[in-house]
Length: 251
Image (cartoon, rainbow, N blue to C red):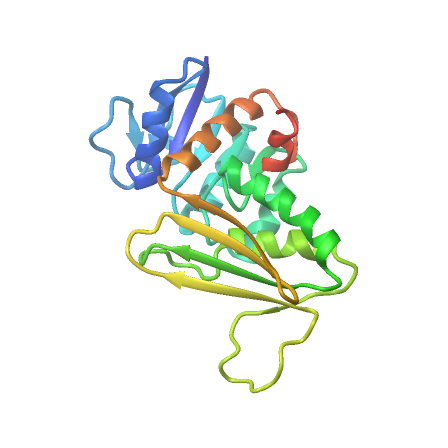
């Protein structure tokens, strides 16, 4: 049995992880970390240093303001960590990369298995279509999401950039410039509204034909399922930086 420390235990994603974990015999949530310490069937702390339970892995769905504290705790106690929090700064991502040299850390821009399969498909399509198709990315999320564009949209763009022969320029806004679209652009567009969980579409627009690759999440539980699978994957892993691409390889 894998004992989990769930950071952000009483948030929306924390609640989703709790529901998924109840049906998985491989792990249990031994403790939580949240500013709200009430309403769970396991102890929840507002101070990580107060955690007394034996922990095998951390799942972090908290807030960027707490990520450094979670990483420091994981490093200090040599506990594998699955970092699912979005909207991290470049400095925090650099810290994840640095800490992973001595601590097992799993970090992906999106915890959905389906999204990561989309990224793989789009990478393959980009290699075939780059010479004659324009590439645009459209992402849609709920009106409470803080960061734009999404980390997933940027991860898709980066995967395309790593595949194509040219050096793409990311363009986030065209309203202030009156000129034709450059061939080497990747347009990235963010839509915010309602309670859209998450939708990402990659458009390959050519002459007389358009190809679209799309993923829609209809529930936050798809991300919770990914996080739980990642925690099981990380159990007893050695130091290093792991991602969904490593998990996908096991299928």
